[in-house]
Image (cartoon, rainbow, N blue to C red; front, top):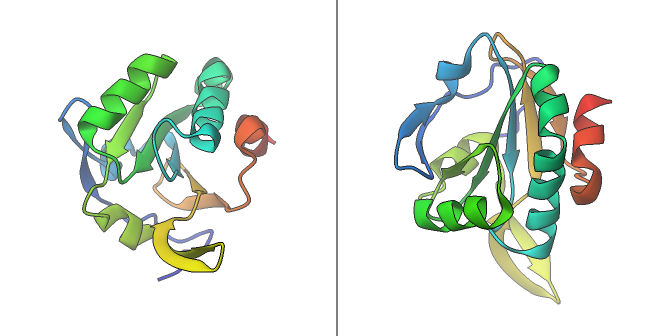
Length: 149
């Protein structure tokens, strides 16, 4: 299923790093940056998370809530947040249900080998729960600028 700008963002319920369950619909009335990334503590994912961390104040001033999501565990997310001092929550989507809803669990290819993995994609969701923007060519070191442009 491919999502498009203007569609309602699929609602979901999932656990964050603390074990607490959140729903996307809990954030109605706020703009949400929902960013899908492949793996905690890898170079590109760390660069992306740290770029969002370093610009977090500007994102908050612009009215955004930041939520990262990968198929890593809550425990892995906790370690990543502590190590990088991330001020936002990370969603543990170990069963990939949210990835499936957003079409971000895809077949990838590296060195001729095919495998399933996360398509690094950011969904900017407006206050009404509609998709305002989809960023699929993420610049990990300059991601905030792509969002705030």
